[in-house]
Structures are given as structure tokens and as C-alpha cells.
Amino acid sequence: MKTFKRNLLFILTIFFTTILFSQNIQEKKFNSRELNTDRYLKIYIPPSYAVDSTKLYPVAIVLDAEYLFDVYVSNSILFASKDEAPEQIIIGINQNQYNERYQDCSYQLENSMPTAEGASFYRFIGSELFDFLEKNYRISPFKTIVGNTLTANYINYFFIENYPSFNAYININPYYATDMPAVLQQKALSLNDENINYYLSNGKGNIEKYQAKINTVNSLFEKIDNPQFNYKYEAFNNNQTATIGQSIPSAIASIFELYSAISKDEFDRNIKDLSPADAIAYLENKYVEIEYLFGSNLKMREKDIFAIEPIILDKENGDYLKNFGEMINKLYDNSPVGDYYIGRYYETGKKYKLALKYYKSGYMKLPEGDPNADGFYQNVERVLNKRDGVTDENETEN
Image (cartoon, rainbow, N blue to C red):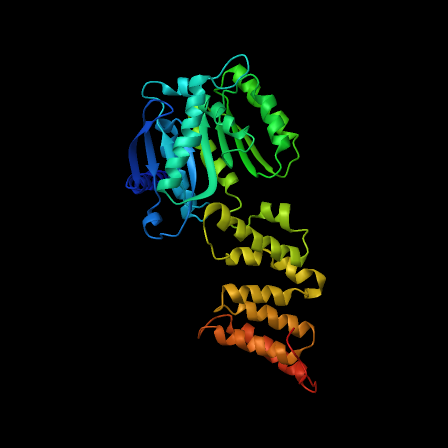
């Protein structure tokens, strides 16, 4: 019975998610000068686009749209609803009505570079499609491109440019061209100014020669120590079709880690050894980057603020408690937490008059009947006892 209920809940979730995103999908016939023909696009626009006329959105270009578009859109909606990724404008390019993908993604056997037809498709995306997006939509600087098998090899031509066109590359079971592993390694090593996210997956359904090339790329990438290159590899014990559904959500989670709240892994990797000042700066910079890259002017999450609390409390004798409290008050002026930390800072420094001021201020912000009220008032009583017989009329805030 429990299994039945879980399956029913899953089916209903998929059903209502499908209804939600289908209402926001446009289909467009795009007359391409580069391709000298009409191409058909699927365009997903998040519901909030019509509500906030100032917000910018990252863009995802999805090749093989007949197979990949709906999977990517449904996952993007799910991650955005969980506040683990920004909402995205998603453009799918249909390539399978007349097997266009083989001409679009064709390359020369002698050097693994695009053929004349492949170069035309490259210009279609990099010039015509980008121009269309910039003229018609509010897009942020962050761009993702997604491909599977043959189209997954093709998306790498945008990566190996002098200045990569995309910030993130989702390579699902790529059919890498012969020379591609060495070219990719050279590019990943040389990244300097660009931060690139590169996701690579491999399913057991891939034929041996492509398995070998994927494994070669992975072995080369694993040895690269370049902070500009954020790489994730996954091997799945499933066929190619099943790995699509596994790869896309995993790739989104990796690519948009910056956007999501601080995880234990992010804390251990980037924060735990920082000084209090550097931890506060890291948190502030995280939200500056989120706004710049994704167009999302997020209010700093309380969860992220408290993630760095142990560093503020445990290091440098609490010298940064005041800075921490002021940051919280600026963001959450109705919360007593900021006042608590400032009060603690002054109490530690034996400036009891100022400590009392902030403890009382925090206490007054608590709603009537709040279960934390008694504990908070204990701070006031403790400082009142410490003040007995102590002259602090010359205390000043600094």
C-alpha cells in the first residue's frame, strides 16, 4: 500500500509539473540565414517573467530538443521551486524531424573540426540565436548548453573557442571526435578568466569506442588542477535513455551549486578554514555573484548566515560578532538575532551598558508568547547583574 501511494504521488507530481510548464512553452518557426532554412524551436519562459519586468534570467540551449527539452524543463522547474537553482529561459532546437542532427553536428574525420554544414549550425547558435535572445528576452550572462551522444560532442566546439560562449556544458554520453580529448584537455588547462562548469556522463549502453574516449577525457580532466574549471563526471549502470533522466538533474545540481544554499560540502571545501572576516566576505561575494550571473537579487538566506556562525563564534575571540550582528540586522531588521550577536560582542568586551542596549532591543522584537523569550531575557538579567557596581558611562560604540 505504501509503495502504491509513493508511486501515485510521483505520477501526480509529474502530471502537474507537465501541465505547469506546458502552459509556458512557445513553439517558434525560426528562419535561419546561416542554415538557409526554417528551424523549429521550443521556448520555455518561467511564469515570473511576466510579473517582474526587471529580473534577468539565465539561458539554457538544449539540442536534440525532441528528447531532452521536456526533461530539462521539468528538472529546472523542480530545482527552482526548491530554491536550488534560478529560474531559466530554455530554448530547445528540434533536430530529429529529418535527422538534421547528423548534418548539424557533422565534423571532418581528418581534424575533428566541424564540416561546412556543422560550421553553419555553429553560427546559427552563436550568432543568430544569441542575437534573437538578446533582442527579445531579459537574459543574464549565464548560459548553459546541453547535448546527448552526437550533439554532446558538438557542444564542445563552443567550449574550445578563445572565449567560450557558454558557462556550462552538459555532455550526456558524448560521441567524442577522435582529436577532441586532447583539445579539451588543452582548453581546460588554459582557462584563466572564465569559470567553466563541465558535466560528463557515461552509460553502459555506449559502444566500446565511445566508452573509451569518454574514459580518456575523464582521466585527463581528473588530473587538471584549475580553479576556473568545475568538473563533474558520473558513470551510470544504465542504457543511454535512462542516463538522460539521471544526468540532467545531477548536472543542474552541480552547475548551480553557487546559487543554492551553502551545503556541508561547500562549507567543508570553501569555508571551514577561513577567518571570520573572510567567511563574512565569502558569504557576501556569493550573493554578489548570484545576482551578476543569474540575475537573481536574492536576500541573503538565514540558513547561509547561520552556516558561518561557528567560525564567527569560535575564532579570534569573537572580535567579529559585531560585524556579524550588523550584517544580520541590515538584512533582517525585525529579527532579534543580530541584536543578540552585537550584545554578545559588547558583553565579551565588558561594555555592559551597550550590551544591555542590544539585548533589550532584541528582546523587544520577539512576538508575545515566543518560546525563546525567557531564554533571551536571561541575557538581559545576566548583564544587569554584571553591571552592578561597574561604571560604564563612557562607553561608546565602535
